[in-house]
Length: 324
Ligand SMILES: Nc1nc2c(ncn2[C@@H]2O[C@@H]3COP(=O)(O)O[C@H]3[C@H]2O)c(=O)[nH]1
Ligand SMILES: [Zn+2]
Image 1 (cartoon, rainbow, N blue to C red):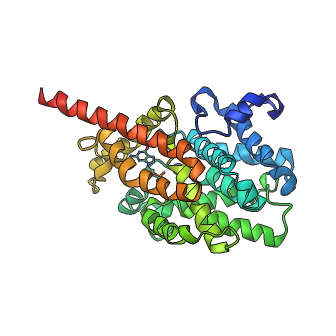
Image 2 (image 1 turned 180 degrees about the horizontal axis):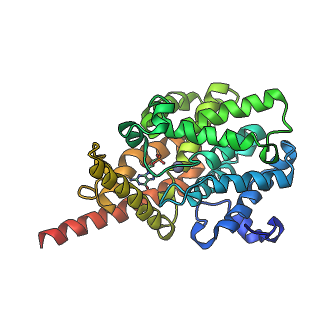
Image 3 (image 1 turned 135 degrees about the vertical axis):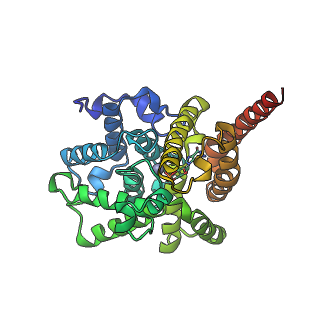
C-alpha cells in the first residue's frame, strides 16, 4: 500500500522500535509494514537467511492482507505482538544467546500467530460447530488455522522468505513455528508456564528442550503484553478487546449458545476484567520470565504493577459510585 522505503525510517524511530514504550497508534497500516521490514532487516535476517527484499515485502503484505478488520485480533495487534517480541530480543540481548534461525522463528511466529482470526474464540468455534472446529477436531482450531494460513502464504514462491534455506533449516523453522503458534492457545497457559517453572532454575541455552519452552514463553508474553505499554497506549487496546468479547457473547445469546462468562457485558467491566487478568495471568507469567532475565523487571513488571493499581482504583471508584 505504500512506497516509503525503510531507509526513510529515522534512527530515532529505529531505536524507539526496540522498546515497549513504542506507540503503535501513531502509525498507519502502510507505515507499520515498513517498520516490520525494519525489524527483519535490523536483526540481520536478510543476510542470515538469504531473504530477498522484494520477497520479504511480498510476504509482509500478504500477512497484512490475511488479518481481518475486527476490533482486536487485527493487523495492528499482529504488529504490536511482533514489535514487543522485537523489543524483548534487544532488551534481553537474546542475539548473544540464540541463533539467527531461533530469533527469526520467534519474530515470524509473533507476526503470524493470529492470521485470519475471525473474532470469535475457540470455545465459540467448538460450541457453534464451525468449519474450523470440524476441520481441527476441536483441538486449538484457531491456532491451527493461524499456522496453516502462515504456511499457505509461504507456499507462494514470491512470498516464500524460507526458499533459500536448506531442507534441514526449513524443517527446523517450520517445526518450531508450529510449536510457538500453537502455544498461544490460552487453554494451554498453565501447562506451558508450569513446564517453564520446572526448567527455569536449571535453564540452559544450549538445551534444545529448554530453548523450545523459552521461545513459546516469549511468544506468549508478547501476545498478552498490552499492559506492559504506557497507559495511554494500553488502555485503547482494552476497549478493543472488550468490543470483540461483547460481540461474541451477544452472538452467543442470540444463537442460544452457552455464554462465555468473561465476555458477558452484563458481568464484566473494564477494571474487573483487567485486575483479574493482571493478578492471575500477567504477574505470575512475567515474574517467572524475569527470574531468567532480571533486566526485564523495569520494562515489563513495573508497568504491569502500575496498571494493576490504576485498574484497582477504577474498580473501587465504580463500587463507591454504585453505593451512593
Ligand atoms: N482481560 C484481558 N485479557 C487479555 C488481555 N490481553 C490478552 N487477553 C486475553 O488473552 C488471550 C490471548 O489469546 P487470544 O488472542 O485468544 O485472546 C486473548 C484474550 O482473551 C488483556 O489486556 N486483558
Ligand atoms: Zn494474539
